[in-house]
Image (tube, rainbow, N blue to C red; front, side, top):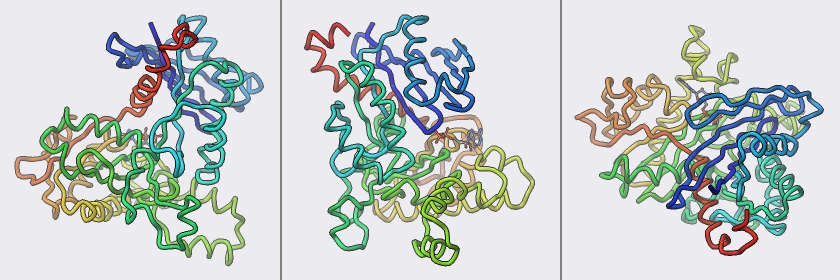
Length: 402
Ligand code: ADP
């Protein structure tokens, strides 16, 4: 059976999943794995589709020194114990820059382009490229596909993707890109199934995880996003501030004497819920804390989501539905209820029982808009894209032999 490996690499961890292609070519998840603590306390944990643990093993730091070594070890384990040799690898790549508005088969030109976009996502892009290079070095004939977090937003109109700065910067790539595109694209494919009445209408999707953003969709296509040039803008997140007056960055550099690296660390790692509360970036911990700073951080999160919902509703010229997704959106009825309360002026009202009971349609009978909870699946989206790109290639005998 043909299998696709999906890779989502961070700085010290790499998540991977294996999908089998069924008789219609639709990917079906078989395996979910993760290498954590790479270079420090490496640990491999893998589960099958039913959630049963297949391996949980620790390694010495020098055995798994980087993401490439982690993938080679995971690949050997898949081959030797599960008899799995993928026919292709799909990668989550945060930035496709101005050029890539769709997934692409990777070759050395594509790698060069993606390397050029590293300054646009300095903390993510190099980590996304590391496993691509490691696999290419080991298995140069194995097809690899890059799927971008920016791609779903690339058809934004000029008003939505510009900053009011001299045009020469736009030309060189300083644009409002938007991120979490694979998640939004998956939700767009689910809307006709879960919410057919609103799928072609004006919908705000709130991807609320450790990174958080919202997307305004019309007819299943992104027209506006709360995120912009980097994944720092828009909503406050676990450790990122969201929207910030750029004058604050100048203040930190000029008046506080901070270096660029220090400002970068502050903005990506020490702000958001963590910075505001001084306690945690995790909504679960903040929800169970009686500390007033924890409550303030959550109040702020809810308030900014409400403000940004107004902004996106304006971009859409009204609202027909609001969708919650990702870690917080899928799992926290308390946060959903609080956020829904900020949508009252747009006609939103939730049914408490449906919200607490884990239903997907959580709007009350009085609500003038649909309100839904739809679990996202970025990895399945990557597997689907990879399978689609692979189809014409499979006619070539080299790839068919896998
Ligand atoms: P990412 O994939 O961006 O790391 P997730 O989408 O997994 O993030 O979301 C992670 C966040 O979801 C956690 O930081 C936590 O705050 C939140 N979360 C997960 N489960 C719950 C829950 N049951 N209640 C409240 N928040 C939750």
